[in-house]
Length: 109
Length: 117
Image 1: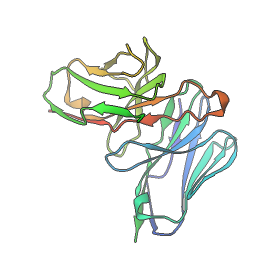
Image 2: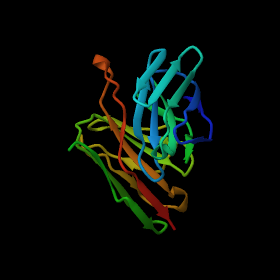
Image 3: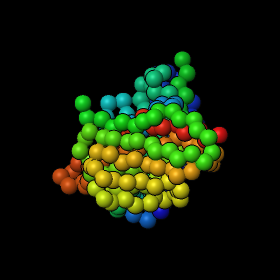
Image 4: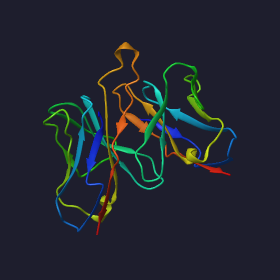
């Protein structure tokens, strides 16, 4: 199985940058995903890393270090609509996802 | 439009009732999944399927059962609902593998919020 840790809550100001860290211990690794979940809604896919390094998609970037079991999601130019829970998930060799508990990001004006 | 659907969105039911949560996808995905999520908690995989007539139990023990008779349809059934089953149930689907460098992320339905009194 997987053990995935991420902070519970983070607060930032509109226009700022926030970095959400995720550490994992894995019995099999086939990629790391970040999902965004607004309250009461379904998770939506944000980013995917399977090799070490940084993946950039507009205002969102994600980094992976497989040797350290570490990833982060970077949110730039924060907007009010970015207030949501951000889920770190690790995929195993059977293509099953294990999720962290999520980090609730609150963006303040 | 390709999508994944769940019905009902909300269900309040009494203890002991049999219920079926519906999940359908129009993306032609082979893999489908059921997750259970309590407020503020992580998603837990309770069932998954790699294709027609294939079903497996997930990491979280569940008293529910699933079936996969058609590619697009993956219903979840509780034979006798109990208050401990109160939760949000999320269905998801994805492509089969990662050949060709595709990410094959999971796409989630809107969820069913179940309350058992």
